[in-house]
Length: 133
Length: 381
Image 1 (cartoon, each protein chain N blue to C red):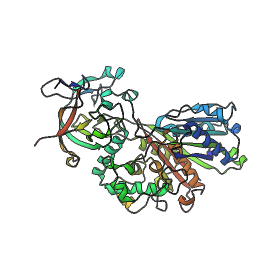
Image 2: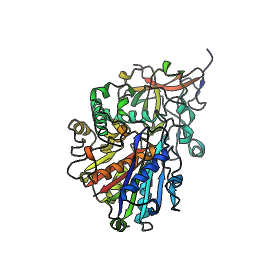
Image 3: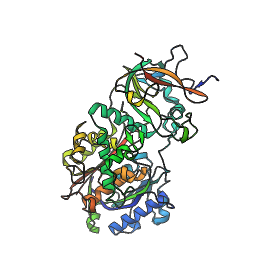
Image 4: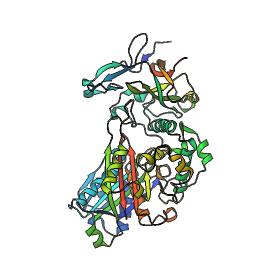
């Protein structure tokens, strides 16, 4: 199998335990993602913690229109996927895909950890999964 | 600043009208509003209008007449209608004009809106990986709210049940059949906890309101409703809005709370003074959360309110008496003005089968939309 490329080259760090890349505003506030264009100039690149707690969640049960580039070729082979927000304590709450869980497993404030997962035939992306006990 | 009245209201039925453009539906609504007052187009002195996807409003003069009036296009997303109303109100309140038009219309393709990341200043991966859907935001917001404030799934269902019950009695509604609670609860899931029947859909429609000074209203002998206040607000720092890949850990304010507070202050009224309310119900959860954000109840009390039917047409605060967005669909440019249209009808006692009893005197409308803005209008008889 060919190596999957990151969905965005500067979304997480290239290290053994990769971290999502956020930013620090001059005010000290942590943001995610780093803003685009002119707004990025005053923002310092700031890798985020790998662990947090579940803030909210839902499941995507219908095939999104473009620009979605998920693995399905149409509604017939579309697999619903989980998404949610994970609060990284004291930093920022990030929106993310959730893997290695079923909808009914998800509970408010449960511990979550960062991971990189295959996304489609050419790309990998980031996700969070319930922390292994 | 002098008082401004809505003296005429017109609507093109919401839903799907094959072969008629969004703008033509707007023109239809303007003609209905003119007929309602009994004036001609060339008596309108200025106009504000717009749509999100139906094109520029000022071209309506090709159909309505080349009277030479100033016609300002408004393009303000979900607040297009509210901004048109606010602008028309200021034009009359300033004394510059005696009769103004506020109009909004739209026509959207079927299915959920597909937003493009670049248009919102967001990176492409956000859309590519399937996180840039408005429906997800509403599900994520109500999911957390339900956990924190003890709102049940059944309460979400009861909101939709009421919407369809009211829509069945409303000429301008799209969904005209009642749907029972069990069917709503067991319908296909869109984004957990929200099923297909708990969501509104993009649709089509047009609304027009004629505003006038008190002097002009009396001169015409028109049946007017006073605009007690209109307030449009964009988001404060650290708020949680649609299309946000990152949210602040500090809990911020909400655009709805800002617009609501401002509208109450300008009108010199509070939530207890309101007799009927139209609240943004993009889905069932939005109506529930907006009941609290607009000051009508505390977080969590909605469970009791819905169980007791307090937001029914004969309840202590009727909410979304025409079935709201859930029964009417959401043509973005027209949706906020539909709420005001419905309030005008209710205050004039023209609600027909869905009329709120005991002659309501004060009516409240609230719109919310991307990228985090809200508009509130309070009308008084």
